[in-house]
Picture 1 (cartoon, rainbow, N blue to C red):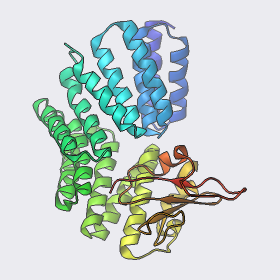
Picture 2: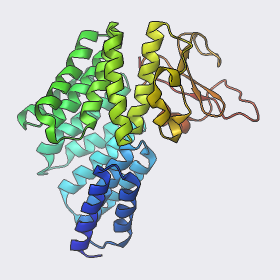
Picture 3: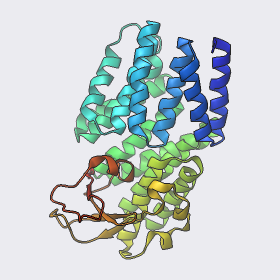
Amino acid sequence: MGQDQTKQQIEKGLQLYQSNQTEKALQVWMKVLEKSSDLMGRFRVLGCLVTAHSEMGRYKEMLKFAVVQIDTARELEDADFLLESYLNLARSNEKLCEFHKTISYCKTCLGLPGTRAGAQLGGQVSLSMGNAFLGLSVFQKALESFEKALRYAHNNDDAMLECRVCCSLGSFYAQVKDYEKALFFPCKAAELVNDYGKGWSLKYRAMSQYHMAVAYRLLGHLGSAMECCEESMKIALQHGDRPLQALCLLCFADIHRSRGDLEVPAKQRDPELSQLPPLIHEAWLCVTPGSRCGLPPRRSCSFSTAHWRPIYSWGSCQHVVTTARALGPAHGCSPGPSSPPCLFVLCSS
C-alpha cells in the first residue's frame, strides 16, 4: 500500500470513527497497519489507534500501539514524532494508573531538545504529568504542573487544552476539598465549550458536565448534579465512551447515596442504563454501609454481572468499572468456587 492509498484509508477510518462506526474504523486502520510501507502513514494510523482505544477504555491495547508508535518514530528519525509518541506512551500509563511511569515518560518528553512540536505539545505533557501527580496525591507538584499547562494554553490560544486543564483542576480541588473551586473550573471548561467548541468533539462537553456533576454533589446541589451527570451520560452513550460511562454510573450512585436512596436499583433510577455496552450493561452500582472484605466500614459499591462482585472504594473513584477487571482478587476476599473473583478498587478521596 503506497502513500496516497494509505492517506485515503486513514481518512476513511476517521470518517467511520466520527460517525460512531468504531469497529469498522478499527478494521480499516488495522488493515493499513498491516499492508502500508509508508512510515509517515503508519505513524499517523498508530496515533488514531491509540486515541480510539483510549476512548473505548482498552488501555492495554492503547499501550501496545503507543510502544509500536515509538519504534516507528525512531525509524523516521524525527524528534517531533518521538515527542508525540512518548506523550502517547505517558498517557497510556496514566490511564493504567502507572503514575510513576507516566511522570518518567513526561520528563523524557520535556528533555527532548529542539522539537517544533514542543510549544504545541508541551502543555499536554504538563497536563499528563499533573494528572499523574494527582493520582499519587502529590498535590503541590500536581498544581504546579496544571498551572504550567494552563500557561501553555493561554500563550498558544489553545482553548481545547485549557478546557482539559480546567477539568483536571476541578478534580484537584475536589480532592483537596475546596468545593467552590472544584465547581468553578469545570464551569469555566463548559464556558470554553460554549464559546469555542462548535467544531470540537462532544467529549469536551461531556467531560465538563461530568466534573460539574461531581462538584455540585459535593456542594449538596443534588438536582444540578443529576442534570449534569445525565447530560454527560447521554453523550458518553452516544459516542461509546466507556470510561466516562463508568464514571457517570458511580456519580449516579454517589448522588443517590447523598439523597439516602441506598436501595434504589440503578435501572430503576435511570432507564438509559439499559443501553450500556456489555461490560457495564448488567452492572448497577449501589452503596451499602458496611464492609464485606475486612475493609473499613465507610463506603462500599457493589458491582453485579451474573453474580455479586464487591468493589470497595474510599472517596470519589476515578477508575472503577473500566479498571476493575484488571485488578484481580481483593485482599482478604474468598469467593466461592462458582462465583467470580472479588475485585478491589482503591480510589482517591
